[in-house]
Length: 105
Image 1: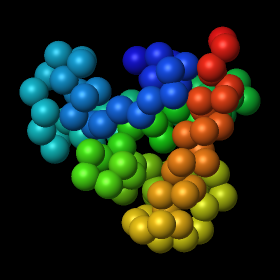
Image 2: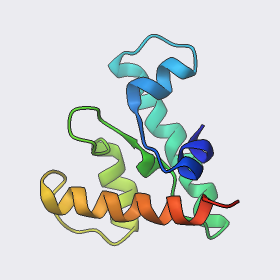
Image 3: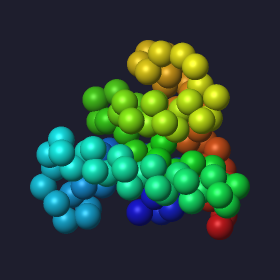
């Protein structure tokens, strides 16, 4: 699902991912999804590939949730706020890395 999104230049909302996996959306599942996304990004780092979890965002502001900022954004070198224009610019840049890398793979 994440590779398809990266190849087509799209992001997914937490709700979309959870529902595409066949579950009803709820906040408990968002936390569990975050742990799965951490594992996916560990795999990406081990294979020297752009991170994919950044493609999963909140519908309200197109930003990843707190877990992403605490674990993955810090690993990507981001030190700023988790909301606002700087956060959005960082997320868009990280997403673009994934889009560019996976576009023709």
